[in-house]
Image (cartoon, rainbow, N blue to C red; front, side, top):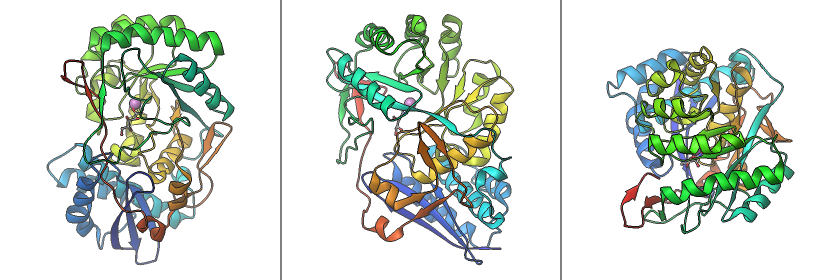
Length: 404
Ligand code: EZ4
Ligand code: CO
């Protein structure tokens, strides 16, 4: 079997998605997600100008060899653009291999290690009463665990709150320049423990509660927050410090037993080396889409398993249903699965990307269709063309740019 066509489809059914579609001489097709939120067209160019021409004529069964040749052959390794492009190729090849075998992808990854996949949903509110309503809404939808994000007194626009709607879905900013949000770490550190206290008081001790600090704290601030949240037993504190500095988490780890989750902006296993071998974290959060595909993410999970660290694949709306499907197959197969982030997509997005995976009673299952189980409606995709959109930037009250 040979690859005869490699096509990149950009569509915006409410937000931008980049999809690679490979076709073989036997008529099999494979899909891969290459969406890099806010920098989509850089990956489109990487794929169409530099990768697609190399794929024509290759045997699609050679997944590992193709991955290695794209990773090592570029010489310029790593980085989100490169790894999103390689991820799309990797997933499209796995999709073809599984279709050729007549099996859902999870069977090729070792088969099911569980019956279904536990998720967490997003609850958010501008203030505590609104957040409590949002938690109630997620529980009514069946979510077994909830991420809680709240507005901060004195701040106008805050991550996870003002940029989400009341279903917890992220709202897209389709504009030529990024939205500016504001930030005050001291106000945040004062407020978050009170938010946890209110949610525990309303919903009890058992509900798993997560929180995302979105890379905004210094190590000592993160340590403080971890300690302050301990009485409320969070399921995890996510991305407490900027991701570039692995050493920061040594200080956080020494100071708190609050579990730590990291990795949505990581691209390779090297970003995790110290974090895993020194047991500084509890969950690895990379997405198939940004980590080079199923091939390296499986290796990461096996590495993490040696240190009792679990998977928690990043699952925001900017991961397309193609990337989500790949995640759900991996979640079902790996032994050290932890939890899957899931908000679902809009009905229009689900129409562009018809998928076999299902979400029932707060749990995902990849379904039994051969491959990853996603079909792209190219006509509908073309009816919703790319629209420039940016993630927000964050500024302190004096105008200084802060980590978003
Ligand atoms: O801000 O995917 O845990 N989820 C997150 C996401 C990220 C977006 C950025 O594109 O932190 O909401
Ligand atoms: Co996050």
